[in-house]
Image (cartoon, rainbow, N blue to C red):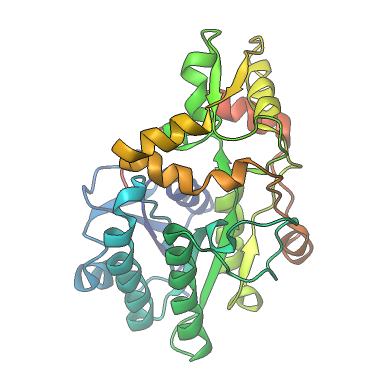
Length: 313
């Protein structure tokens, strides 16, 4: 074992993975399109197009683990960006023998009426959920064929440092800090699981290095669900700030906006996550890895504070 690790993507999860590995003394390489230095001690940045299998394979050669922490933020590009990127990542793992550790999400399950366990089928009908389900199915098929060693971890909506405008809670903070009303998607009072990006990184590293964990999905240990109203109120309270009014964006506004703004249409496809309880069951991963989520009070402080800034994927 060389203890060399390659992280594709320098968003909040990728940066936390890189930081955890570097802190313990591992050799860490972060691959992004720009190659910009991520500013983490002991972490080397490399410029490469991760969707180009030849470029990526050169970066991964000799690595023990290849971490897929990419997260194209623009939903409207997923159908064109993800297939070649995922194909390149999988093929690079196949060629180099690196463990392939994937940062997934809950979209593949689609609308649910029960707490989500890893045993639920990937039954999404929207194109983003279907796409993410297919990417995992391809990796799992390669794993079962003995071509790679693959594992995927899935968390709910992100909170924590660096999440910024991509998070349903964090995107409210700039105006909420000023006491302004928060406008949210769906029902502000439905219970919803939130996942700290640090906990995603912790279980991704643990799953990658545990051979008995490979070949399946694991849920990220996450705190008990909160409503959007509760979560925002508690994050603000972590900094001594008062609560703000929280209102639902009218469905008609989302629907009409989606006719002219493609990103709103994409977000509207996922609105089912906010109109009913959306709860992640992490009991299997807690039992297997012995990991618990970061205490909620700490999550709130981390989310409100400056923390690590987001970076390019």
